Length: 178
Image (cartoon, rainbow, N blue to C red; front, side, top):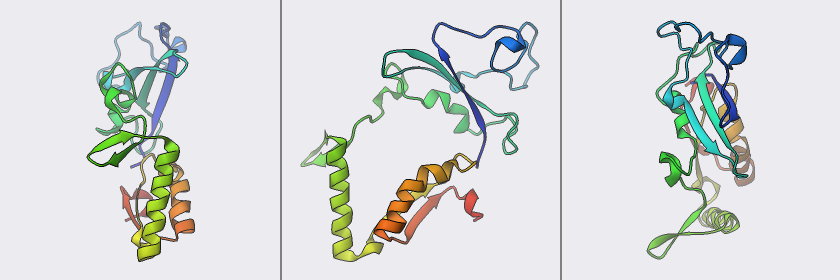
């Protein structure tokens, strides 16, 4: 749908001030904020993450009031972007962080090189046996402003140019006017 959001990141232990020029939202928090104004950070817009070097940061992803698509509102999915960020101490801790390969009766951890090699061999074997169009690709267009295009560009080049497959299914197709 192309909804716009603003992302803010600041170190844990630091907060903005109450005056408009002291906080990222530009809101005067010394007074009551108008109801339903959208001038706040909801719990689902926010997370505290740990970077690889151990430093912790607040992340807030809030609807962009200047976006012509959502005008400061958010969808059910977009309104939970902050809470969907990976946190080892939160509900996203069970997220897959390394590739798994199904071997015999279970999925086993493997290296990225092993996983990429396996995928390449399966794709190549399918092409040899059944032709280029035996390969089918699933892509998406979320993010607006070319966000879907950017996320699909490399894989699209691979499938359409290198593999020369013509089959794809596009989830959420606003960019294609369907």
